[in-house]
Length: 387
Image (cartoon, helix red, strand yellow):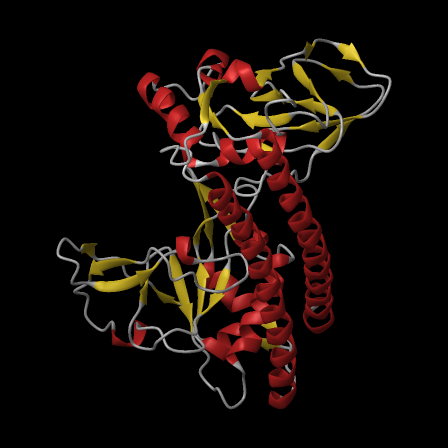
């Protein structure tokens, strides 16, 4: 094993400077530009006026490893790392991060060092070096760098390991993009079939909410169930897709209180800011928290898949936000939701759209299965090389 401090030296501190009023400053990477996959997100990069002396060595170069030293949360430990592969001598990094730069690149492959640190973070290895101040988690960076050890293997083997991991990582990225493109295809098809609902540019009949759906708030209080009930909270609903993730089950001997019943005929709609466009299509019976409404479409007038995509669209979100912003409340109420008037296409068209979504969802399941298998391969390789 080799000490990280001997490979990179102490982490260089970041720079922040002052506000760049005239947009003439230096691009600075922040922890908001970190992804959980260890790559840099180059969107929303700020520029800052930085006049510090001797910053030339801090301009990022290919192979640099940026480590988060302040941030995180109770659910996400501090200490994430990203590998820099962008244009050299262009970006700096902020004061909530530190820079690790391999000194001898003929002995140590920078990507190998990154993967070692990335694997250690995923295993929770930074938690022992964390301290907390009000609202922040801080990494004792000097202590971490001085004590962390990297497995010392021949340089060519380091490169071979990185090549394998890079290939699998790139495959994961492509599979994720494929799923995103399928979601975008559904949105495109919605607009193609129904037009801009906000403008109602296809001249559909405008119907009040009561004509096509109802909020079905059958609440159960202190009911001891005789079967398992999946429990959906708003945190269980993925914002962009409406996928239901990581829900828990209320056991037979549990007591269910203050929850709404729903079935596979309902839509679950989050009524709490900032999650007002979280809309799920459950395919099972269960209960949802009182922070969401189960909405039951009128099947003769409105297909629930069409309604779900309508409620995710700007026409409904803008309508709801008008109430939410005006009242400055963290949630919207039943009367406000029921005040929505919606352009209502012919039910045959709605069902055609639902059939299209169903076919795309089957493709997404295939893609997701492949993605899960590739992720499992990546995790197993990381375990093999860095455990």
